[in-house]
Image 1: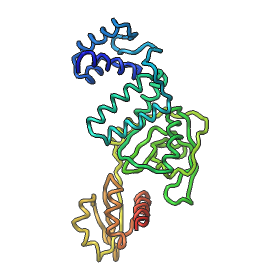
Image 2: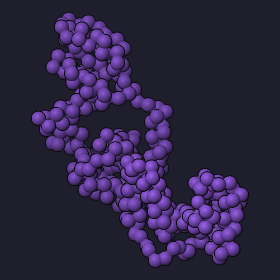
Image 3: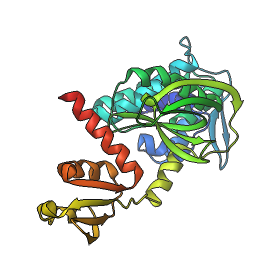
Image 4: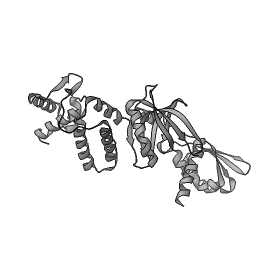
Length: 311
């Protein structure tokens, strides 16, 4: 990249964020800090109103932006969602071009909108793309809740559509994982963070009340989950006459111990992925029973329901 293109790109980058450090610019454009300082000086000499503070970084004077395009807050967030998907699925070259285009979009936002998109950037994680009618309908409410820090009232069903419960939640982010949209939210009912499948939210509305808690960002929450990874301890009961069929398999799925009990064998396992365990259990489900945990029973019902739809 020649100097003219780099200086232009630095200008766009500065306009896309409230604050940016010389180190960040150096890493993005793969040049030395000294080169960045010279490029900033070039922009200053050209009359660009850059405000610099030692130890803090550079920012653009409020009101200076590239004409003539202006975007609404909703459009900016839509671009942010697209960036997450493109970054996950597009090839490296197209992803690079899209990021460059998005910097131009961000550069014309007002400072308040930049702040919101930066906060939203930490609240959206795309793992695998999917589309759901209910999710599409509910997502805008959750996005607005995240943006305005306004609590939501939802009617949620875990598995049985007839078994619903209303509660107040405070979302901290949205995840699309394994083809399913989820919102990670603090539940005022259970007093902890939970994953809510967005396509299982039967009713949703903003209640006009601010969040009562100061929450972690989605990235902080995910980092904590990795450090304190949940370990499940499934306990199942298997008929003796079929137990020998899984003698070798069981060790692949976290087998810990077993105890004979009349015509069956009680087995205990340890796993951090109930989804994987449930699908293995399905191979012996006609001759076995889940004793605990409750989450595994619900998950198995979901798997069976999905199979039934495809038959």
